[in-house]
Length: 313
Image 1 (cartoon, rainbow, N blue to C red):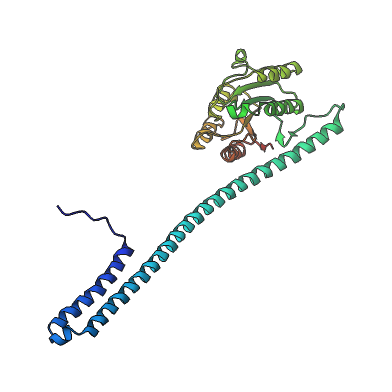
Image 2: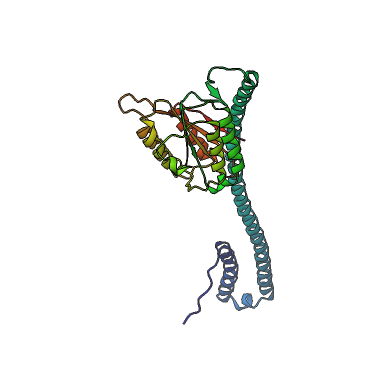
């Protein structure tokens, strides 16, 4: 059985060809010399020349092997450099995308903060004076008579729950009195189950009770407002003339925006006139989770449903 030889790299094969050719030429000279005169064949000077030729060939082979080794090292360095450049390019592309996302968030936040400052300034000037109903608070229209809050109660939101409660408190403190108010999770679970399908009266005591109940709230969540919107719109939209829905969240877990858009198109519009039954507003929180999908979706949702999107810092 013949012994299997290890596969040779293409560079090694090329230089073995050189060696073979060199020794082949020497053997050919010897064979040709045998067909000549005996004197030529036994000529010591010829043999010396052949030995010298062999030595020179061996020297050239050694030089070529060194050159080959250098070229292989250069090739490996080029490959490593190319791989490093690819990784650097991918890292830079990721950094650029993150920077664009942050810029978008900061732009929205800045605009929202401007509205909040204007609203607070108006409130300070009008404190203690009976005025007409404000049309806008914090950049969000507040002209509806009934309000529903759909709150993401996921783990990432629970980590910033104090911030969520503070935001809810600010909204309730600055929002004009309405005829009815309701709070549910993004899964459509009511904050107070006994108020299912009903409206809670908007009183100072009721607003405090809402904030108190939210402190202990541990509702189900899948970080998608589809279920909450479905419950809210099916239960209240068609029988309520003036309705606003607030979506509070930090991320969107869905793979596509279509379920949210389709739910709103189906349940929040009159099939004959196309009129939207409810305004849909959204507030975005930064919790350490990726927010680009949530921000993109909520901008589209609020734009299509006569609402406003506010990204908080």
